[in-house]
Image (tube, rainbow, N blue to C red):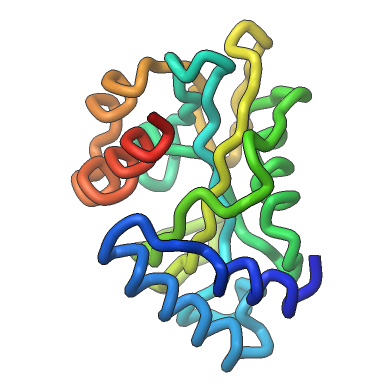
Length: 187
């Protein structure tokens, strides 16, 4: 998917709530006005892709215990120059959870978020606070497939019921504004 095709996908996306409406505008403007919007070298904000991974009957959600945030969270990562964000989301799920079979429920965008990232140390180097301009996809995987951690990013991988997933996360903003929304949307 080219940058222009992604812009068209974002333009046609129908926001679920006010948060998505405002974040959609922010994300579109950032992509249109910043040649390096898809690169981490843009230290103010850059595009990321996330995955809300569910099992076939939607009774379980795949989460990782994220080392930087010290919390259970969804899976995803940096675009690193890639504009096919669905591919980024799928790749990140495979890398972070060690699973090989993961498929999009739909190739359409599932949600959008502007996410704050506090300053932190990654691979021995300080990373300043910045924004992740995030596009989320609904993906499906087999909850019986073996999972494995990615030591430099997470220390656990597990399937939870949607209600357990909300309780496991220790990031209030994510619980209230993101995960609760995703659970509501998948029903």
